[in-house]
Structure formats: C-alpha cells, structure tokens
Image 1 (cartoon, rainbow, N blue to C red):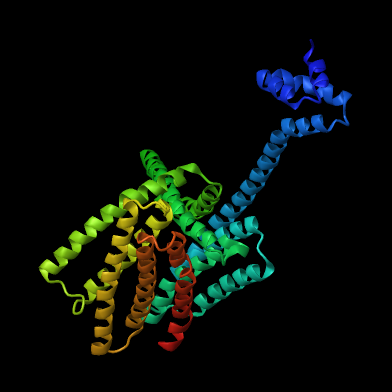
Image 2: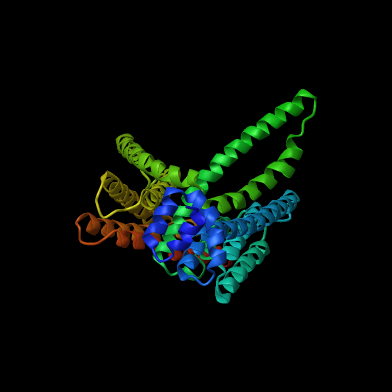
Length: 415
C-alpha cells in the first residue's frame, strides 16, 4: 500500500506513525506533504509537521543570528585595529602615554558584549561614562614619570578589566555564576589569543624574510600598519570565538589547569625552600620584595584559574587538595610580604608605592582568607562548591574599586 495512504489511515494511531517514521524516515518525510495537504485540520499531523520542520527553521534562525554576530564582530575588530593604529601614532609623537593603547581594544570588546547582552540603560550609561571619564582623566595627567602617575597607569587596566566584566555580565552582574563565567572567559580567551598570536608571529617572520630576499626591509611599516592592527583586531575576534563556545579553548583550559597547578605548587615550594636556605630577606631587600609580590600575584592568578577551569564538584578529587595547598602557600607568601611592607613603612616612611602595595596586599590577604576558609569547609563536607565560587567571584568588585581609587586619587594626593 502507498505510504501516503498509510499515513492518512493511521492518523489516529500515533504508535504506528512513529514506527513508520523510524523504519523509513526519508520516505515518510516525502509522503507527509501529501497527507498534510489532504488533512490540514488534523492536530496529529500538525504536531508531525512541526516535528519535521522545526529543526530546519531553528537552523535557519541560528545561522542568521551567527551571521549577524559575525558582522558586528568584524566591524568592531576593524574599528579596534584602526583606533589602536591612530592611538599609536600619537604615542609616537609623545603626545599621549602608551597606556592609552588599552582604549583601542577594551572598549570594543565591551561594545561586543553590550551588543549581545542588551543590558539595561543604567548599566549601559555606567559603562559608557566610566570608559569616557577614564580616558579623559588619564590624558589630563602630566606626562611625567612620577611614582603616583605610574601607579595610576598600572592600576587603570585592572579597573577597565572589571568594567569589561560588567559589560560581559550585563543585567546579571550580581549573579555569582555569571561572574564565574567571566573568569572562565578570561582563561579561555588568553589560551585562544596566545594560540592565534603565535600563528601571527610565524606569519610575520615569514613575511619579513620573504621581503628581505628581494632586498626590502618592511619591518617598521609592517609592525605599525599590520601587526598593531592585527593584534587589536584579534582580541575582538578571540572574544567572539570564546563567547561562541569554541571547543578548542574550552577543551584545553581544564587540562592546562589540572597540569599547571601541581607544577606551580612544586616549583614554588622548591623556590621558597631555596630562598630560606640562601637567606634572602624581603624586609631589607626592596627588589626581592617586589619579586615576592610578583610571585604572590602569579600564585593568586593560577589558583583562581585552576578553580574556575578545572571546576569544583561535590565529589572531592586531587585537584581540590592541590588548589587548597596553593591557597595556603599564597597566604603564607602574602603574610610575609605584608609584614615586610609594614616594616618598610614604619622604618622608611610613607610613599605612593609602599601605600599602593600595602593596599593590594591587604585586599589579597582578605580574599585568600575567605577562599581558604570556604575551601576548608568544603573539604570537611560542611558546605558545597558554591561557597568557594562565591569567595572568588564576589570579591572582584573590591579589586576594581581599589584600582579606581589608586588611579584617580594617587596622582592628586601625591603630586
């Protein structure tokens, strides 16, 4: 019997329709149109019509959305490249400082997030006004290498990074899981950007060599007009690819976290033992104290990366104990550094650098205490993994506020 008639005859028999579809799906789809035309009022066939055609419609909508996102990403990437090149021109003329180059990249990544998140007007106005105020204020500062101004230059990117997080989270800025997603985005972004940048460096080296073969040195021109443009545009492209759940970065990041964390732990333990053995003293050696703080920031970054990328499950595993050991180690380093800074402040007086380092060490110390206590309770089965994630994510605005305080007040207080 013709399958067209079989479909019509079995309208009241869903089981038989399903069996026919599974047995010969292509034949069923081809014959369905005739049955649907003959029985347009059938509710059963209406359900089958949606079932057979929904996927095709969904794919069309998804493709359209991807094309729209790709176009917006492309425009923003080009604008980032052009803006960075223009800013670099003024940097070369010594009209503005090099830190202005961040405004050739971060605002455009923020614009991409805003375009996709469609935040409320108050979030949008906050982002636009703070980016604008930061840019204007930065360029009102005198082009002098004073400690307070250099500190402002160093802290501004941290403040803008927190602003970028607001653009990423949009209306959900108060939700811990969304902030955690932003931290994961950063780890995956760095991996992807580094991978693409290495490819770009190889292309640059090949291009330089090819032109040298014909007696042309295009190094300066290529750097100013291709490398700079590409580096800025690539940041927007990487943000787009990570936000579209590119599997490369998402699959690699957890493995890097699991492999890198124990290596960092072992390396730092050996280093600290060696430091004690040779008698290095951060209380008296300023350069060693600076290096000590650099180690602290590195350990904090690795710890947060490991927590966000390797994930925390209800079932404990070796990664949790390694993360906890890293946190304890970072707390020991910070406690020593904090003591050394207080000692130097009491012995040699207050300076912008000492005050800035004291502030950031206090913030990190408090954050590490919170994370350590949360992890301790988690390992004792007193709380779930969400408490650790809260300790990591809820503290992010504090770093942004401190960075804003140093950026906007230190040049005025210590000028």
